[in-house]
Length: 93
Image 1 (spheres, helix red, strand yellow):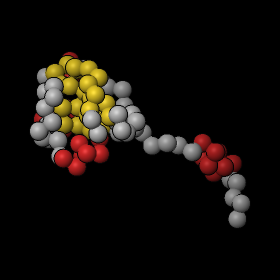
Image 2 (tube, helix red, strand yellow):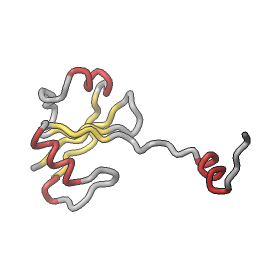
Image 3 (cartoon, one colour):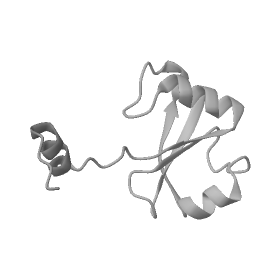
C-alpha cells in the first residue's frame, strides 16, 4: 500500500496520512476544517516500512485500513525549567 502524506499549513508539525492521493472522503469534515488546506509532502510505501519518525507504524497501517486516514500530531512541549525544578525539589510555596 502506498499512502499520501500531507502536512497542515495551519497546525505546525501535524500530518495527515490518507490511503490515496487527494482522497479525503473518509476524513471527517471537522478534522479537515481544523487541519486546513493539506499540502502534499510525499507518497509513502507504508507496507515496506518497519518504522516511521514519530508514529507507530502498526497504528498507522491499522487506522488507514479501518478509518481511511491517520492523523499525526506533534509531541507535547516539555517545559524543561519546570521539569528541572521538580527534579531538584524546588517548591516556592
